[in-house]
Image (cartoon, rainbow, N blue to C red):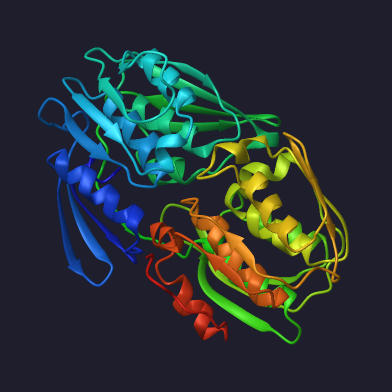
Length: 418
C-alpha cells in the first residue's frame, strides 16, 4: 500500500503468498495501480504518488478476511480526493466493528453511508479537502497506522500522541521514517509524539519482509509443550513491540533465546528464535502487554490450559472485535474437554490441568485463522482429536501452516466441505 502511494517503483521481496496479500493486490489494481510479480515471492509496485488512486464511481473493493487491509486502505482512500467507492469483505470481516476508523476518517472530511452503520458493507465519498487531525492513540496499531496514512495526504500537520505504557506496533512509522520531511517521532519519558507533515512526496523503497513472529508463536508453543523438543525458527521479525508473547512466556519459565539479531535499513530487528521444551509456571498477563501480542492470545490460552495452575489474562476486551470473539470462542473449546475457565469482558482466568477429558474437539466455521491454528496445537499436544470446519481461512495469513505442522510430525487429514 505504501509503495502504491510512493513516487516510482518499489520492490518488495520475501512476500508471503497468502489470501490477505492477494486481497491487497486485487484492491490496488482496481485503484489503477500496476503490480508485477518479477520472481519467487518478489513484486514490483509502480507507485503514482499521494492522492493518485482513481476508480469509477461505485467500484467495489473486497477486503476478504483482512481487517488490516480494510482499516489501512480505507484510511488512504479517505484523503484521496474524488473517490466514491463501496467496501465489503467476507462473512467474518463484515461482522467486525469499524466504528473507530470511520469516525476518525470523518474528521479528515470523508463521508460514509449508510450513516450510523458500524460494519461493512459501506459506501465512502472521500474528502476533497482533507484537513489535519490530532489523535490520542490506544492499543490498536491498525487504527494508529490508519491515521498516519490518512494524514500523509491531508493539509497541515497531524499529530498522534501515544502513551508509552500501551505502545502498539510501529512498522508503519519505521517504513516511512526515512522520509524525514514527512514523519518525525519525538519521545519523552511517558509519551511518543508522532508528527505527520502532509502533502510531501514519499520515496519508493526496496524492502524484504521478514518472518511473522505471530505465526512463529504456534510452532514455538509446540516446542515448549512437547517433551524433548528443540526448535529453531529462522529470520523472524523481532521488533520489540511485536514480541510480547515471547517475553511473557520467558517470564514464566519458557526456554526461549533470540539469536543472530540484525537490523535492516529501516531499523526493523530480526533474527532466529531457539525454543526448547519448558516447564512453565502459571501465567499472569497484565493489560499493558496486550498491544505487543494481540494475535497470540488464543495460543497463549492453549498453553495455559495445558500447564498446571491458575492463569490470568487481563486487558483483553479488544479480543471481542477480532475475526471472532476470540476469548469467548477459546472458552467454548476448552469447555469441551473439561478445562475450567472464567471469562469476563476484560479478563480470562484458566485453570490449567493435565486431567482433561480426551474427547473430540469440535470447532464451527468461524472465519478466524488464529482459532483454527490454536485448536490444531491443542489437539496435537493434548492427543484430543479435533474436527475444525472452515479451516481454509488459515490461508489468509499462513498458507504453509499445515505443511509446517507435518514437518514437525503432526498428523491430520483434510476433507472438502460436503
